[in-house]
Image (cartoon, rainbow, N blue to C red; front, side):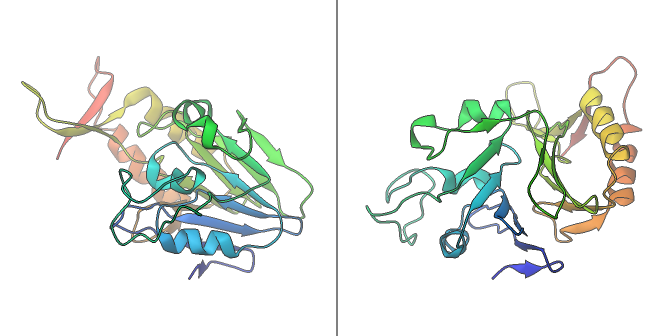
Length: 234
């Protein structure tokens, strides 16, 4: 069941098995707005239960945030044996889909119900609520999008995370932040009015923006002159 933040914002918490990002739910007067769609059967059941028009904003292209946009069948990669997916399964239906340019490249267009509306930034009109899609610089994934709600809450997905570098000959496994992207993200956050950040996969989904900025600044302070990345050994 969704967790309520206030009268118009709820979310479905992230899970570890299977890996699924938090799904944001914003209840408007003319439509229900989703931030990501998750990957669990529980997410799918809730999405099917929604009545009326639905619009979706996707944070980035990783499968734990985009899974229910496309078709899946038993035996497919990523489908667990206990997932009740039959031949009659259909992806979630929606009126409009908002994605970044990088996300468009990775989603199988032939299985998308509605043509993606690729955006740089957009304010969704026609609602008493103010909904603003904001491109968010990120080391984790290109083309990440944030969603500001009423200049109060900011859905950020995984955009504050680093990039994982797999081990290979001569290279130890590690995570890293791109120095330029990290600085751009800090500056972007400082210019956003919302003071509460909603960060996916975290035990504390909701946190003050000033805390998020402080954490990112502490990582940025570890940069080495002349190096483009900040490497953190796992």
